[in-house]
Length: 210
Image 1 (cartoon, helix red, strand yellow):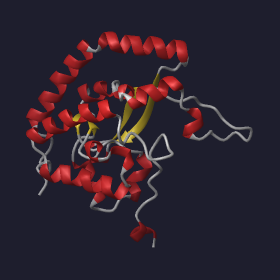
Image 2: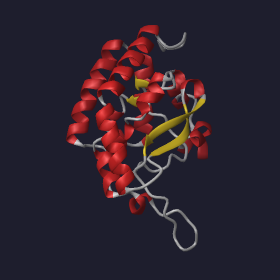
Image 3: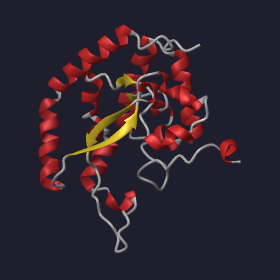
Image 4: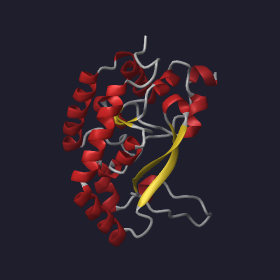
């Protein structure tokens, strides 16, 4: 039985807001440096935003630092991610610094420090009922799946870990995940699937397609 079925634990929310505000204040010099280098090296826009489903499937606008260009081929098709990511953007991804603007999403109550990562809106109709339970909690900047393989594991395994988090949440588990995240960022493991710079698209479950 999920501990989140009656809503977001108040203490978790208070912790998120206070620590996110503190992080934004402490990291403000770093944020300004990233903004300046991004402006010089990549130009505008500095930030990338996209609609993502959050708690209960409610859609919100997620913010990150932009890491890719919007280059198209001669037919007008967007080039593959591997051809659009910039050298600076690759650095931001490897260090997870591109995620820092999501602290504002945490302050606004759209995200938490820890929870399943907010994925694409079109995935909502592709989840099985069990996988959809990942939306019983606020999405997170990091999560149980991120410290257990991140993008190097399959979609099915990732969703299993997300639902496990929903059913086993505790404040101690959140602190453990945050601590493990630091080591994962330092090691740089699992950032992407082999041969890709981003996770391949989730197309649904075989049992649904059959």
